[in-house]
Structure formats: C-alpha cells, structure tokens
Amino acid sequence: MLLINNKTNLEHQYFIVEMFHSIQGEGFWSGENSFFIRLAGCDVYCPWCDQKETWSMKKYPFLTLEKIINNLTNINTQHIIITGGEPLLHDLFPLTKSLKNLGYKTHLETSGSHIFSGEFDWVTFSPKPYKKPHESIYNQVSELKIVINDQNDLMWAESEAQKLPINIPKYLQPQWENPDSQELIFDYILNHPQWRLSLQTHKFLGVR
Image 1 (cartoon, one colour):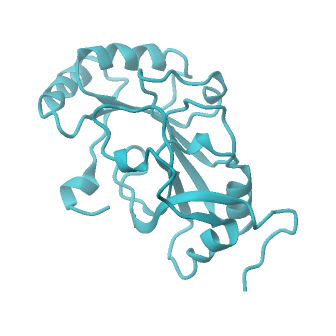
Image 2 (tube, rainbow, N blue to C red):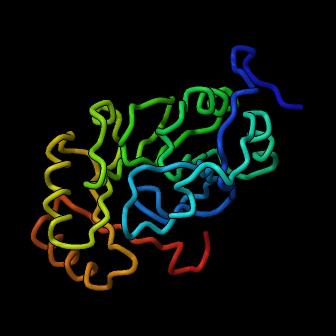
C-alpha cells in the first residue's frame, strides 16, 4: 500500500508521455541507474528536437500522483528524472513533494523557459535561444548543458554560462542529426577548458 505524507494531494494530475527505467545517457549523471518520468507539453519548439511528439498534451493520459507513484514499485533506483517536453509548464511541487516524501532523489531536465517550481536535488539546465529562460531558473542550476548545432549556439552557451556560478559543470552536446557539430565542439573544448563534452550515450546504445 502506498504510504505518503497526508499533506500531499494524490489526486493532482499530470499529462504523462511515458515512464521507464533506464540509464541516464547525458551530462553529469551519465551512466546512472535512473527512472524517467516524461511529461507532455512544450512551447520551445526546437527545430531539431528528438521528442517532438511530446509537444502537445492532448494525446497523453492525465494521471494522478497515486498512479504515477505506483509505477515506481520494485524499481531498483532512488534517482528519479523528470523530463519532457518542458516540465516547467506544470506545477512540479506536488509531484516532487510526493517523491521526496518517499525517499527518492529528484532530478529535473529543463530549458528553464517557465517559472521554476518543485523540490529538486539536481537541476539540468539546457536553455534554448528559441524561448529565453525565465529568471527564476538561474539560482537553481546544478549543471548547464547546451545543445550545439552551429557557431551561434556556442555564443549562446557562453552568454548563458556568464549568468551562472563559475563552478557549475558546463557541457556542450552535439546536435544528434548534425555530425559537423561534433568537430565544432571538440575544437572548442580544446581551447575553452571550462567546458566538457556530453554525448547522448543512450542513442549509441540503442536504448531509451
């Protein structure tokens, strides 16, 4: 039976694209045993997005917190990643409060394009020039991860990095469908050692 703090409203609902147990493929926690909760809805509209099917909420089930949390039964990890879409389109306080009351570590992947909500142990900030970040994100960031398609994205990366503490891990990640972006990043990091390389290792492995 689900045991949870009585102050949490288990009837609160979210549009859910999918929930699955896998390995984190990107950034600081790459290789970590993780459970993913992918929320529907996004208004950033990156032209190269590999999750365009998540942009609309209309075709996905609207699940209560109780149903979401029941999917965590018997998973062998405490690391829960909330991703999207753009998760900050939703009020994440009810979901993250429920997860933390049950002892899970909460991790957000976001473009930061909407006001920050939720209680998180780690925040992966991946801002996009297509919809500028909300100011509330900048004091919440644990790591910065910028997808690089061309030279303009490198300038965007530097402009966003300047808004964050110098010790925040900073990653450049190739745009998967553009092989030239790999060489662009490789050369850039050799001359800018404050940046690291992030690869979508789950795509190389052929897993989610």
